[in-house]
Image (cartoon, rainbow, N blue to C red):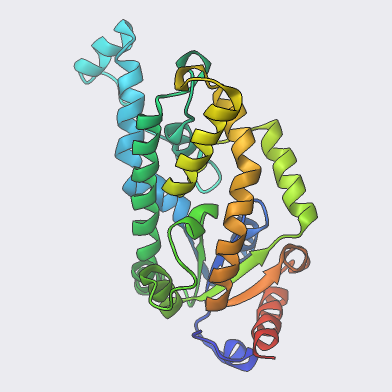
Length: 287
């Protein structure tokens, strides 16, 4: 870890942190709170994915749909209109929409082969965006003079790393630049995330082996073909299993840094309380 003790953290003129954990536990909330306090550069991995690494895929997909409408097709072919995605830190819907869901086309689904192709595009994009962290630390200092830095990761980071491998290339690179901070939820938080997802299911990124396994099991259990799968029913059924699949992967990652709870995050209402919380977490780990 780049800070060995709470005192090291307090005394560091440049504080650099990376948040990870399940979606909905406060990563972006903390990032925005620190950014608004001043002196902190907020690097959103999801935003980088949607703009730098998947922006063209997203735009081309929108154009492909527009080309099926004669009126829009004529305008596109004559360069009379422009189609782009309006991705912001608070609106990453274009990425989710592009990832989509597998299943029946008449219910908004896509063939599994196409779904897997987009999943692989996202995997590569997220790895690239994570590995850009060091570049953005340097850039934030050189261009803007920010002393402190936050890397705000997506919930799927654990799918692409092996926390039990001391030579994992992604974790080795990230921990060289930042203090890795695991935001840990309780069983109650997990249950609430499942309820929230059930109300409004959203596309997710999955480790290929996990996705293949749950897809085969879903087809077998429901005795349906690929074209008969209800996309929302599948991702609802998969979500709780995905959280269970990710938990031990997050735990393995926790060896690379410190952990704080979602309840502690809720109490860190300003930058000073956050700094005190991280000092406590570092010393707690040492103890």
